[in-house]
Length: 290
Image: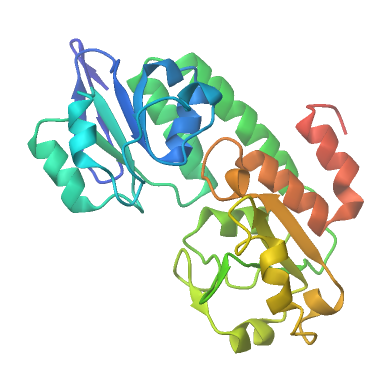
């Protein structure tokens, strides 16, 4: 809302931020936020980004301000930002409060669902007066997401297990947006009933849940890649996915980051879960008629 020339917007902690003018020096302490700023043509406003923020390419040379779970407070302060954007599930509240006590404008944004990604795009568009571009991007993503989600999937839907790490075994639960991706791609996340974002499991519980497909991300290092994990999983032939050799790889940048590129992850998962729909999904992504 606007009161005179002042714009007030509330973040996901319920904190109200007031702006007389759009921010022109932004720090993103979240790779997904960095990507959102890129697609709404606001990456030129960035003066600092978190570790592992390297998309779009324009941000690669910017100062790094720590990770989204361990920001470098001194570095953030030294860059004199007009706005600091942090992740709801990562940013330590003590750091958020410290920056706010120093009168810095800090927005904390939640990213648990696809709808949160759309909300964040529109929120940042309003703050930065990039509303037209934000609306365009959000509409593009929502349209394709809805079209893929509404496809007439063959049943039963394949039971999928997303293997993040092995020691301990870590997957995705109900509070992760990846749970939504698996469901909306026509799959059934076998750990979707766990009320956590990244639950830890035993091998016995994975076997009992009997996944049809194992999903892995690529680009996170050999130990976490499919090649790094397969020697472990291949030992358990009583898991249907292992017995049938049904393994899916997705670039970790597009599946692990709650940003605009998740639509690519959705399309890839849907084609792997339902090969019979591959051509229809490709047409949707190209914005062609079925």
